[in-house]
Image 1 (cartoon, rainbow, N blue to C red):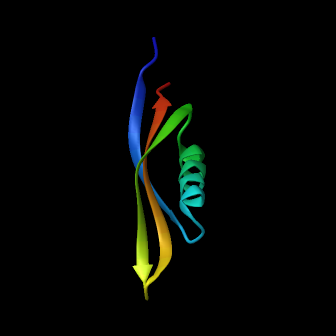
Image 2 (image 1 turned 45 degrees about the horizontal axis):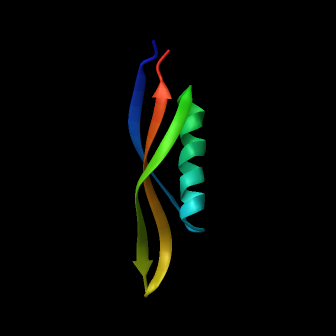
Length: 66
């Protein structure tokens, strides 16, 4: 029987939401083992001078405990 844990991660990118998601997954895989999935909880954008300056993604990452 496996036991999983879910952790919430927020990441950002100047390129877009997809890139912000990938940045978060890349960082999570550098410190967490056995990642099995991710769910995007929210997407937000930082606005400066009437332009999008940063894309932010909050996600739940699921991984199996050793």
